Image (cartoon, rainbow, N blue to C red; front, side, top):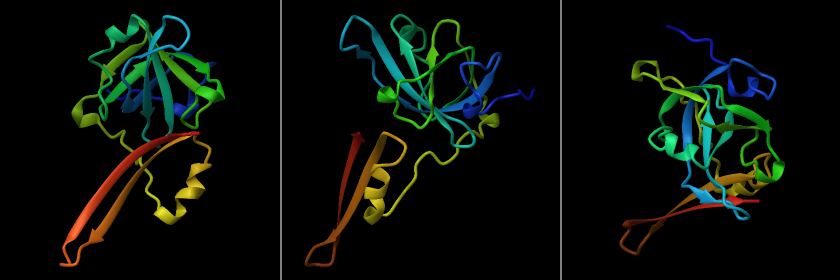
Length: 166
């Protein structure tokens, strides 16, 4: 049965009774807050239009969702708390974050329904990388591929990956 799903950008702190069909792009390990005893886990979701939102799970709710939100899987999510996010904690270009707690409803999307995946990675030439470092997103991942040949003409690959935060 089709659901009336909202896109991520349509969901604000004033939106009520919403359902979103999302894909999990990233799920971090559990972290300890710098000051205090709170534990948290960060997630990044995207929708069918490529809109992204960051979500956070705190303390005892982490264990409730430990087997949920597998990267690259799709879910229906509703009843998460939607709050404005302080720009210093924001790492996607969305002014809101979702707080996932024990009242949040999460349901797997059946495999025959999965059409959420929009392009979540944007590839740019190495020469244009500097222009993207100062984009509206505070974080990006750089994956560089170097291809060198030796004196015999054989190709040797060199890979490196790094996350940057500004």
